[in-house]
Amino acid sequence: EPEVTQTPSHQVTQMGQEVILRCVPISNHLYFYWYRQILGQKVEFLVSFYNNEISEKSEIFDDQFSVERPDGSNFTLKIRSTKLEDSAMYFCASSELAGVYNEQFFGPGTRLTVL
Amino acid sequence: DQQVKQNSPSLSVQEGRISILNCDYTNSMFDYFLWYKKYPAEGPTFLISISSIKDKNEDGRFTVFLNKSAKHLSLHIVPSQPGDSAVYFCAASATGNTGKLIFGQGTTLQVKP
Picture 1 (cartoon, each protein chain N blue to C red):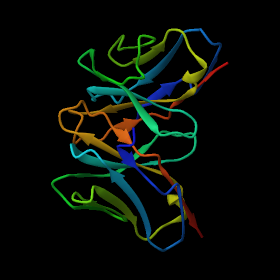
Picture 2: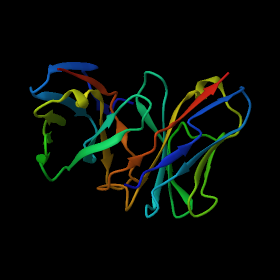
Picture 3: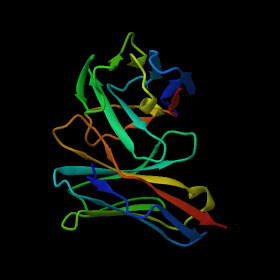
């Protein structure tokens, strides 16, 4: 069964460093998303991406964040200068068609720890 | 942002009995609702969904009920099995956005053998 994969599973970094989280969405999916879950809190939407551009982003997704689809398979989230409060689980998701009425499939997540 | 609320942080039921997980929402623009199940160290797994034109959707042991006037939905699991023990998230989406999901806080279900 096709699945969304994410690497690395755990990333530890120093405050102020740049990190890149990687995702491989399901191959025939066209819509891509990043969410995060701070420990003990709810899953929060960060950004949606379609046709090589951002469709929607949340208030969390400030200038420190960027997304890219560098090739036909990878979808990346970059945090330019990490802060302590960026520590969270980051989930990538993808869906086949337009967002509504199509369930999103989530990857296993990357645990980001900022020291 | 409390647009989607799951007021019960945890629920414990006996194997074979019914599990009922509840979810309330405030945004009347939401027209698509989903339930996800999450095990530790894994991503959310899609379980079942319902659009606002329906009031019930069933898939095997899982049934979702939607009460639009009350802005309330519930997930019924019958019969509950120990493997159903997980965190269950309710999520909602609105036509016109890009599929952004708004999640509730989650309910931890424990099914005891």
